[in-house]
Image (cartoon, rainbow, N blue to C red; front, top):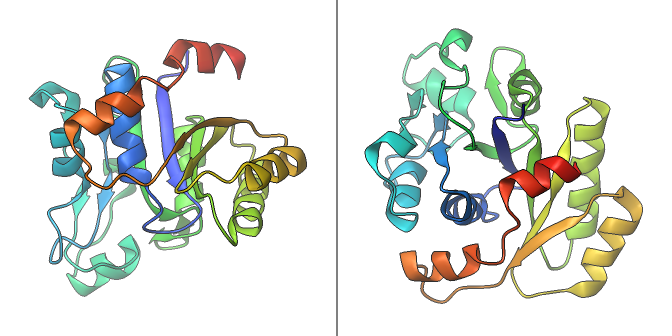
Length: 212
């Protein structure tokens, strides 16, 4: 049985955290960001999702690694003299659904010779891909989808972030065969209320898994 989803993006700063908050709200899910970097510049994604999705403590799994520099996990860990132990990167034993948010895109180095896509394959969760709606998204999205398919990783669908662009959505669906799950337009003020409103547009977890 599918335990949850892995949220990744075509780039960093793409809207993964907002999408994760929306999914977590819609599904009353548990949230986990296994690898957090950049804590010397921001509070981190776990507190953000916790606030936006009104999470109770049992629905928030702390990161396996919380690193200071806004770099790939392998680089941030090296600066702090930390060795990332793969045994700590195992899925928490919680009731489904679980929303796991990655760091950066699929080819981000995690540790040694391991990329984020390798960790995704190990978790064996279907992927929700977050992509920009505007210029450049066709190339970035198709490349990411192709990489996921080559590893045999199931893709539930794409979430487009930004001003709606039907042409780009249609082209990505046409060439990849991957469906659009929903869109997240630019939100002037991101709040628990706005997240709750957008969560109403999200298909149920069980309906997505059943159709996959």
